[in-house]
Length: 171
Image (cartoon, rainbow, N blue to C red; front, side, top):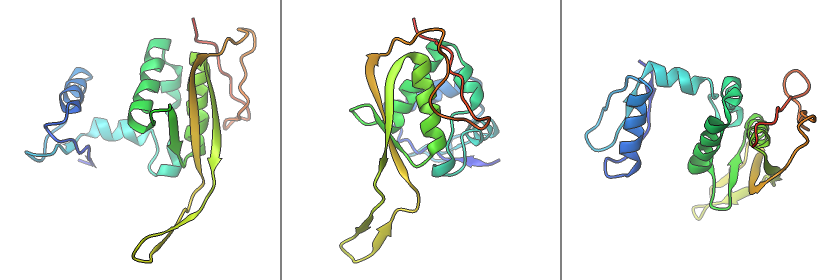
């Protein structure tokens, strides 16, 4: 069984929520360590497999972007809880994820934009130089809602077919 490692200490508040969520959705998982929790699950592996394998090819699976509005809100909240900062900014090296998050936010009616982070090198105290290998992006999600004309349903970004359609899923 492929190993998906979610390292959460039993003392962490999220442990109870996560294990209850896995049980609720019917994921079969096992705990491999008494202190930390490492999960093995084919179902979880296939679920994560749809999201990409490296930091620069992460995506929100297409079928997830077609969910109803309440689930889309929970999806965005989960992304912000796990990858976002306090100021509702998400950082990623995947331009595909940038496109998917902007589509998600547009469907929910949120104002959002992104910016490239300048690529630079950092020198550690030991003299080792770390250089960015992939372009990084910040995605900013604003709390205010944008009121779109319901007849206008195309986004500014392009998908694999050339253009993305973003149906209004607001109020």
